[in-house]
Length: 188
Image (tube, rainbow, N blue to C red; front, side, top):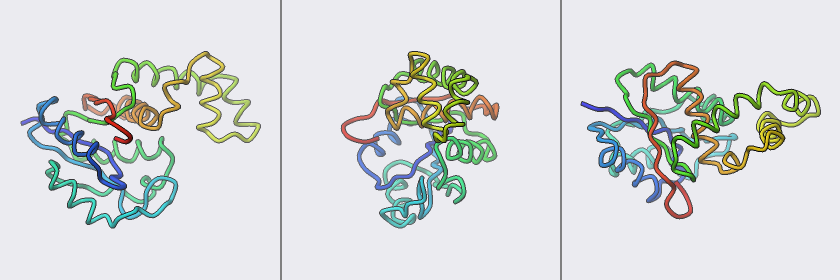
């Protein structure tokens, strides 16, 4: 039995999310699909547009087998902490072989390369200088990437989050294979 997982806010749940859940089974061969989802508050502390139970029911009706709530401190955090918390939950769950996510580029090798470059950027002098000037972590990293002649891929929100998932899989030595599908339309 092959188990896949999706990390999401589903704020709101839409057809791109349904496609991602279906792709876990149809394209990645998953028999079971778990979701780690933000509760009633989402990234940057905003309240979700719908109650978590409504979003959970939508996910279950559209292909998820189980929905786990991402603990609040991670759900409301930056992309880095969001990814850390969600991958930690899935690693603790055990048995999850595949982590599926949407991305604007839809190319896993490009995302893995961007994850490596983001790590390099965070170790650069430019990054440290931008932090000292008061830039946020994300702004400083983006500035360092652009200084390196990179960074275009991380300007797209789903790509940026995908990079954080890949980095956390590596950092936590999580035994999950990454799988991405390209965004369809306006959102994934």
